[in-house]
Length: 166
Ligand code: ZN
Image (cartoon, rainbow, N blue to C red; front, side, top):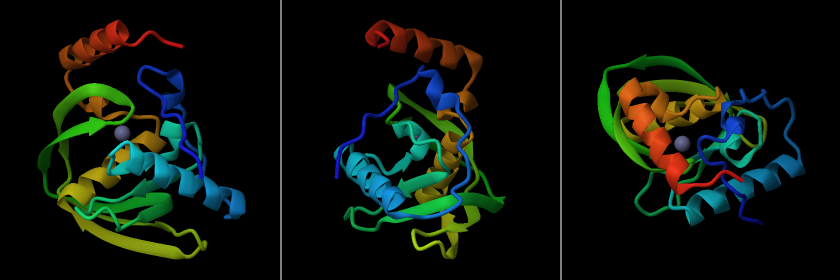
């Protein structure tokens, strides 16, 4: 297992749209283990492949307080969403930025597990927000894209100042 470097905004690779997973093999399972390790080490509740430069439609998530309820979804697809929720969000790829984002309160999603079997998941609250946030990543979107232009400019300026690009 290994900790993976997390891409940081405004890295253009965060804008790549991830490709569907077509088959599950040991290499992919190892990548997912690394994603869990990286997510837990960074104290995140979710991590999308895109954030660790793996441009496949995968995310890991654990919104439990105990930190032992791992969920990994391949090729996630949101089938239905309802309600409105404004929760403060942050992102391991956008340092020192937190803001409220308008999200659906409930989502119904489907995808595939690490055995290649279809799964369905109904989520609400924090888990629903996390799913929408991670699916955004796989589409090359960041939570700050949902904020006003003014707020986005402020975050970009702050990020550029604090973080020399490598
Ligand atoms: Zn994120």
